[in-house]
Image (cartoon, rainbow, N blue to C red; front, side, top):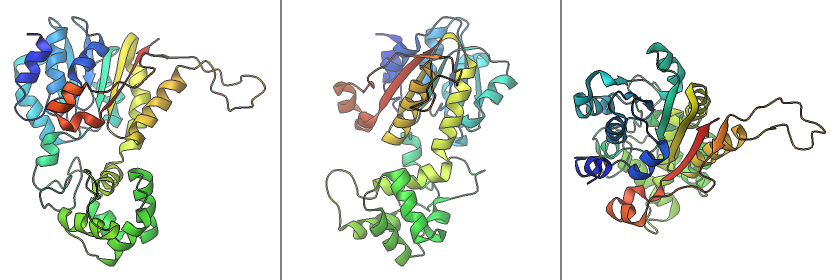
Length: 315
């Protein structure tokens, strides 16, 4: 049994997505330094540490203090080889500088919601349990989903649902939400969305995109990812790998665009007579086609079905 397979069988709660492909993409070296920017329950981190031993080091970052507590327990056997930091990955470069962790051999972003977050009562990330409309990764943040749902104008709500949820029925949902205020819980909101679109259709709940849009807005996810990708590039040593697992088209589009830009010689606007940007390629894209979980993994873990992985190497 391989180390990776063993790690998967020992996961009690949260199964790390695309674990085998992730470890392969990182090309882990013994004694290497790695950063898991979304350490979650520590599922990817524990295998990275196993594969990089002896001498491997890892910084695990997560904005969610509950995730850090779970990861700390799981990664306890690795002692001083692990540094866990309860901060948003938008501070990636600052965190690594603080601990003298540069250059690094590989950086991983797993942007999906963990099972722990989705199932934890009171967080408001899903609607299987009735919870307050919170959706913050950390209680140090100020803005909540309740603030958006109950205070934004109809136009602002519709724009948010369209932009972050790619919701085609954004206007009618926003109108219904405003008409049913105040809304206090996740099930109340899910029911209002159902009513706005005429009930449940298909295998995906009609409120899924609305909840996605609210979570992205509350946590400023796309802007933070954009900031962190640039910092990751600055931290990687020559030949270091950058691996990003995303779960919806907005994230994947952002990552694809960043990889493509940093792999190009010239990034001048189309139609520029001669290159004036002076841009130097810093990445080699290793995943020309997006990587997806295997059918076997999707069958064992249906939540993995929307995962998309992209891989690049620092030049």
